[in-house]
Image (cartoon, rainbow, N blue to C red; front, side, top):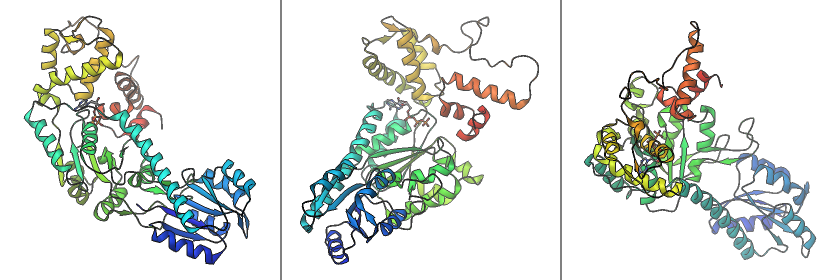
Length: 447
Ligand SMILES: Nc1ncnc2c1ncn2[C@@H]1O[C@H](COP(=O)(O)OP(=O)(O)OP(=O)(O)O)[C@@H](O)[C@H]1O
């Protein structure tokens, strides 16, 4: 995507010449001839780079810097000072300018410094992304089951067509995000992997997160921000829980999928991104369509490439190799010597239904590694319910204390009980109850 540069200079002849040279070099240029004009341009769209003349008819560029830095912290500012005015240059750098140029400005020098500032911004963005990707990447095991092998093979084929949208379907914890990251690693292109959970944010925020907003687009929008669609340019935008996307936004997403174009909230400029959309859900989208909560046209658009990820209990042959690999990973993380499984533990692994799929398997193993000191894990916690004897109290049982309570209160107590069982993981608790995240928060009494 081309760099957007705001050129603020009251010398109209110089500004027009500089703008035309910068445009030839691939920049998208907006011009302003005063601070007043600059503020108006900034309110329309946030630039990547600002070239700011120090002396302007309605004020001093340096005293404008703090305002600019607060409202557009990601924007690089190049200050233009009078010839030989070293004091201003130092002051500008202290006030947060990225670089300075002195008059008379050589056009080659201007292009070079503007390009360097833009590259610097991209580098920062890439570093930020690389950090988050390293945090989330997992080694992928070759599955033994033919069903999972087929899903992976499908994904590998899709990787060769970088713009196609992909829909990943499967129960919670089967590894939809892991596979989305795998697809990103497989495809060529240098863009980042960007993740957004559509259920974890209030509906009003999802739009500005996805498509960005200009300053003043809504009450709290003091700073213009790029949307994740822009950030994921050339890469992958992973839309987790796409079934939770509000209907109005589904239309905007469809337009973006069809045209690759969008507008920021409160913005007028049409922007483009080549991010590949990978959407995921554990909901039955056809039912959501039938019940009017999900647009049929978006469903068809998303499911051109649909990959079903089977639950772990339907691919038993994957459980043991996966468990062994996860234990190896966890031992390394915990600094523990490698351990194996007792024969009883193997049997338990082979028969336990794993409603929480790979996530549950990983949690069970992590717990066992902390609680079981021996050289072979027993995995007692996977014992089917009841096998420990009917007299044992069930720690998972939900008991309403005291006399009958209003239904609303019982619902709140139950929501808290489920949350405690999920060890405080709100998203998972909401899912287990079949509630949307905001509804779950309301039941908890938190909203
Ligand atoms: N193939 C795999 N290899 C290693 N670990 C995996 C694999 N698949 C899943 N996991 C583990 O299971 C956890 C859950 O995976 P992931 O978040 O991808 O599931 P999901 O299907 O996106 O879940 P949800 O629908 O709840 O968001 C991950 O944190 C990871 O630890």
